[in-house]
Image (cartoon, rainbow, N blue to C red; front, side, top):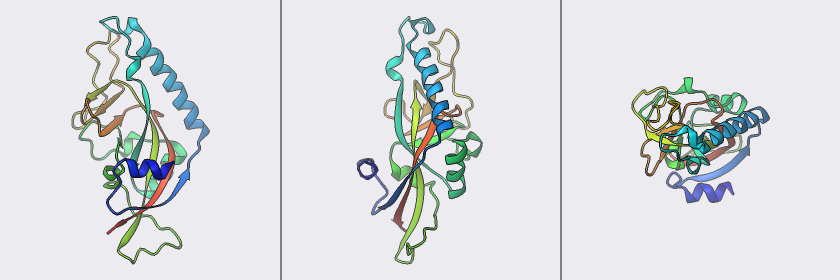
Length: 192
């Protein structure tokens, strides 16, 4: 399953998938489900929007990639994604996820795996594959926090996500705790 997803989503060139380590954190999953229910109710409500139309079709759970250092990946597995680690905030100040692992590879760092020789011109890296709760999206702005208010929301709710291109997002930003949960830590090798 992970191998198929890896190869179908533009992995880094000449990469070799080494392992996928399943992450199960019941607390994070419970919080994710609560937020999913909240978003579902809000986006389904016709009373929420000025045109009287619900937006439930915008709600989805996507599998997306997140590159970071081994220390931060460990923290994500234990405690969840944390906006405080955001450094490059071109599309908003939140947690960043990529549709393609090649993009997340830019932020993934080297890891040490016993038994793997990195002297053959390859380096070993790790990134996270996450479930990400997505709703209505707006194009993000540099250092923007929080997400902008929806102009069609009677209650002045904010967009659930920002992204690089609302018509075809390649990068999606989350702003709420537990809007994403780690599913796998993926270990792979790429040319130096």
